[in-house]
Image 1 (cartoon, rainbow, N blue to C red):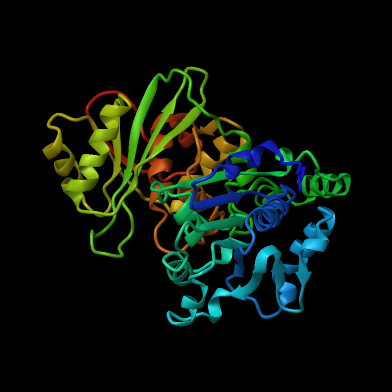
Image 2 (tube, rainbow, N blue to C red):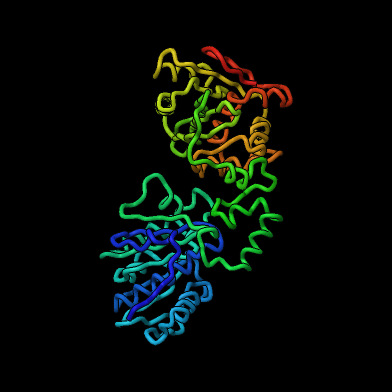
Amino acid sequence: MTLRIQTPRVFVPLLQDGMRYKGAWGGRGSGKSWFFASYIIERCIAEPGLRVVCVREVQKTLRESAKRLLEDTIKAMDVGSLFEVMADCIKTPGGGIIIFQGMQDHTAESIKSLEGFRVCYWEEAQTASDRSIELLRPTMRSGSELLFAWNPRNANDPVDKLLRGPDLPSRSVVVKANWSDNPFFPKELEEERQFDMKTNRDRYSHIWEGAYEPAAIGAIFDRVTIGQNRREAAPELDRVVVGIDPAVSSESGSDMHGVVVAGRCTAGHGYVIHDGSLRGSPRQWAERAVALYDAYEADAIVIEVNQGGDMCRHTLQSVRPGLRVVEVRATRGKHVRAEPIAALYSLGRVHHVGTFPELEDQLCLFTASGYEGSGSPDRADALVWAMTELFPGMVRKAADPTPQRVDYGSGGWMG
């Protein structure tokens, strides 16, 4: 038989053969679930005997599974005569089967029951745990495919670390899909989207644009503004600095060393260019900072020295003697220092060149009463120091007392 399946262009990369991991992430109304449902039904028809498992992290009843979605897809594709819908599974052509399970119910032993399955579809994968992903990955063998669909929630969620991190698994293809990529986006959802844009600004980007979930009520930075002012590239910059917020210690599990590169153009706009934050020894953060200083032809390194004092400058200059270092010492709370920079964002004068999930998470946890995240906002602090050096006029307008500043070099000003 011949099936004619209308596929939005955004999902075409997921049709290529030979890929083990296929993922689609984004906001509401993108058609991710419908794409994967039609893909699974097509595979079952093309490969008689295919065994498919659809999983969620927690599945207490079949109503919480993808079963109804697949039943509706079978009906919409008019292939009901080839499938037998049972109470707890769907029988497919050639003796195949589609089953539905919750990963939280599996153990290292019980997961072995899935070893003969060729396709696994993980719906609502943003709730997947590290344990469940670790159980599943080695279980799916012999030419298998792992399909993931999710609305991003947090950069630290396991599925984001797996499929949006710096090192993807081999044979992976991942696409971002939002409502604007769906040619079948219904008018009813468009009405809902417009309503949320007007009345639910804090959560709009998460619901509709695939941005991470805002976790702080009344945050001084917001994801909508960050998203609207995002750029693919920076113009010619007249100043570039590397901001550093060193951690107190380099022990395992300690805070990150915040290392962020930012620049300013002649039009008075700021650009966040690179987040090079890391865990490690003082020597390691110094080497990372100097490498970024060279790579982006920066004119200064701005570093907070509240914890390290002279050690911070000495560490940097042991890597590069004569390096221009601007030392700053905070005398106000983190959120107070961040407020003038948040004002620049609200004016549309700061642009992120690309996406920086962990950094953006931290920014959106700053409120007028403090930082509401866990640990230290190391990345955000490094960005604030860099932007404060680039936009001294904004900081002069902030209430005193101001941070103390020592410049081992010439030029620049830290309010």
